[in-house]
Image (cartoon, rainbow, N blue to C red; front, top):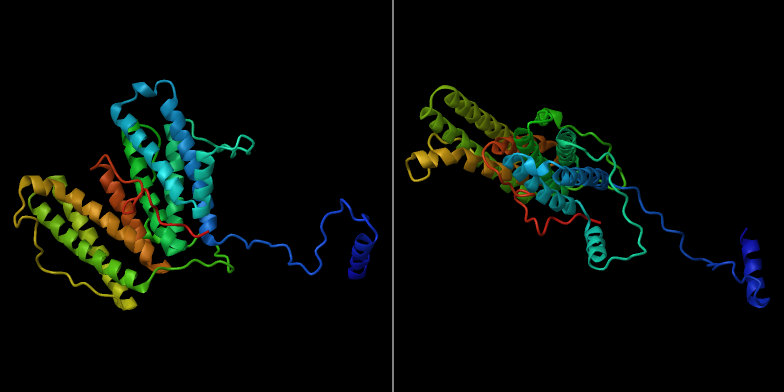
Length: 348
């Protein structure tokens, strides 16, 4: 084969235009580059982008549909908030190169460029949109269990924010279903990790710092909910006591993990300082919201910093706090705890 190639090359060189139009022949050149198969980060990222595109198209369609103007104000407001958040989340799933290409195409459109394919299976009504959001929530939670730490921080934020959005739309739109979010026990590895491109975890110091803070805040939340329960009666008191027990259980679980991993262990204190020393009615009424918002950010940070098998507790805790906030606040950042204009870069 090599002898034939050399003969043809000689004929083209010394025999005039014998090879004209036959293309370039490179003797001893590099082999054609074959890109490696996608890693676990890219596999999840591409599937999340597909779901985000479907959700954006569905929410746009519902917003533009006849009769949307007659919808309840609360539903219209929740839909607008969702429409503002989804593109931010989508951008966070793009690599730096992909972001640059999309920005260039938007600034200087090429009339001859091939348009991106339109999303398929676009939800046509609220029930279908909620089904896509639940799928997005669960896939983002699963991804957070397996992807690299920098990406897990963003996917966990998307999972929590989507859990919040789904419950808000379900409540104000009176349609569809929102199954319970995954628990820590549900969050097991779903996909095989390619050996050619394994995910990475964050710095050990970040893990030590975030697990210490999460313990502190969980112990504090347990104490405050107990104090609030003492001021309440009936079902409200029982609910507050249940939350107090949940927070203390989480703190104990985190402390056990920290001890095993050589991280700081936070011991429960008998008494914690309360805002202003004593709780007035206004402060007492806002504390559950303040605590949930802080814990959401603490667990999202820990989900991104922890080793893979330590993440499920914080992923599930972030989902639970986001769902609690669905009944308490009508606004949440598209990527809680992250700057929307400058999301963490995804490695190319």
